[in-house]
Length: 94
Image 1 (cartoon, rainbow, N blue to C red):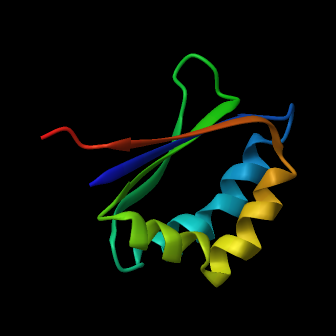
Image 2: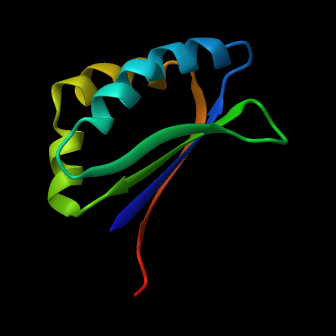
Image 3: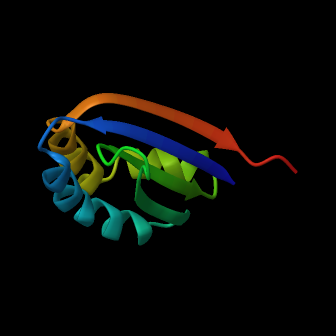
């Protein structure tokens, strides 16, 4: 299993826009083959930090996700609301 943590610092006043735009990405991503989970979390200490926590079966599932129509359409829209972004990939230790 691979976990992706995509932390986003949202521009002032844009949190609701980000959340609304992300809804369709979350719904459609969770339906993809190889997706274990795909959710959005808000930092409990800073409501302008929203983080996608994603779990995928393998690299192929991530590749297909990153090349999906909904990803290519929605992620650039989300980018308009982001001030800073950090994306990290983790692999499960067995």
